[in-house]
Length: 204
Image (cartoon, rainbow, N blue to C red; front, side, top):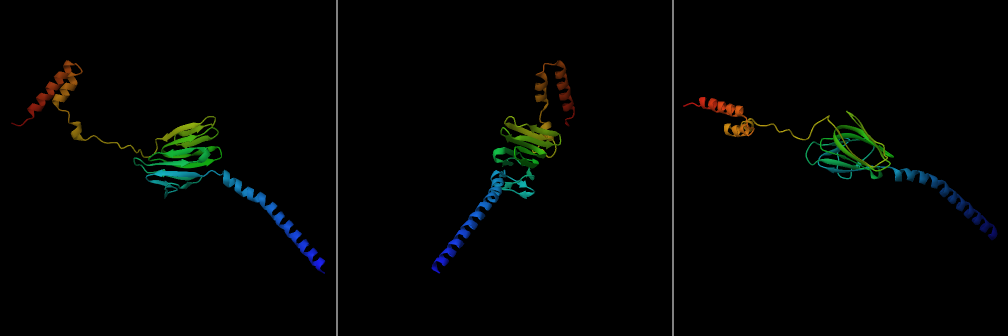
């Protein structure tokens, strides 16, 4: 009776051992299949300075930038965004830039909607950025350091209009020196005429 119980226990132990071993072997390929893509997947990491948005949401340092994300940098001095793509390279956006960034294994691509970006890619990584003016591309045979821009959109460099006071700041004496510096007799005559006209307009 005792030997029968021992045999039964041994049989159950053997069955459980093989069952556990089999389940472990079957689960290994699934684990590797799930782990490899995650290990190989490229995910962008953002470094932001100033007002930067990703998909129209305010972005901070460390924000994850996924494929097909829309990035925008506010038009103000000092603002910028740098997307580190790991082994693919990096993309930097200057103030006033907007783009849709796309990337995949061996490729940095996307659409520059306005502004200027800089793309750095190592050997073996292709670049293809669409702009309103055309496509800027690199074949990946050499490391790329590309400045890509478009004339579309807001320019962040302010255009300071000259004030009327500044335009009229050059008096007849300064004008005479400027014109006589060119060595023309006619220039002196113009200055003399200008001085006479100014004198005739003086109210006694």
